Length: 296
Ligand SMILES: Cc1cc2nc3c(=O)[nH]c(=O)nc-3n(C[C@H](O)[C@H](O)[C@H](O)COP(=O)(O)OP(=O)(O)OC[C@H]3O[C@@H](n4cnc5c(N)ncnc54)[C@H](O)[C@@H]3O)c2cc1C
Image (tube, rainbow, N blue to C red):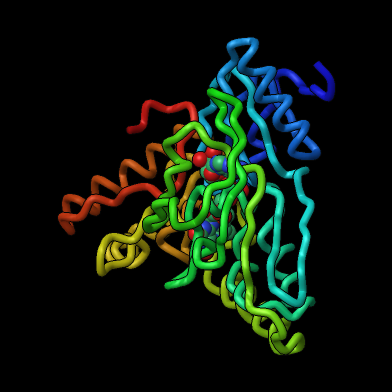
């Protein structure tokens, strides 16, 4: 089969923002959709389990040997922009901060808030990433996907995707996102857009621990409440297990001070859940996706 290149026994801690992870049996970073499709085909023919990661910014990967093929989309980063209509077609691996800056420079409005999210377009759609009332799903028109079981490629319109708070069906089905078609507001004031984008990034770095490895918010916010506030109220900021610490800057972040492993982090997640449940009667559901655990 042509265009198949992968490496073996790759340490995935280099591919997650929290700098924790196990070893992938096979690992590949395709350059484009064709190479991606060939890899899925190879995995199917060879009966190999296939998992996909983007920038690994919402992932806790167990420190174990992960059988099968792990595909990272970060090299699939082509982006086409029609300035007059505001239509943008981005491959799954386009980074949101890159896209946000490009949109502002082209005078397209609506992506300024994404600048502080260190994930890919594919990962953001799968996670339904957002900020306050905004989410990338708002700008989505359709996604091009491949079914890893049948190899069928199709285009799914936004109206047929059941997005919920930090949830999309891509967290449960066999579909992997190759690219996304989005629409942003054309003819915006470029100077203002660049200014807002810069301000949004500053606001994030001023209030969240961007200087340390993390995976963003650990828990989803419960209805009418904030996970970070509940954790802070229990005095848990700064609580550590091994090198994993509840950030002193933001209660809903766990940071890796240097050599935390997946067990330290999972144990810390469990302690937070137990304490918040005992003291506040609220179960905190993780937002972060877990790979290689028996976590429900
Ligand atoms: C400092 C920091 C700040 C953050 N701030 C925010 C925030 O404000 N709002 C927010 O919502 N999130 C935030 N996050 C979390 C994270 O950045 C987002 O969830 C992001 O969208 C994840 O994208 P990713 O490419 O890193 O996905 P990954 O972490 O690599 O993967 C996440 C999930 O998406 C799946 N996936 C990845 N690519 C594809 C694809 N092409 N097709 C199908 N499934 C795919 C993976 O299998 C996995 O289940 C933050 C994270 C950090 C570290």
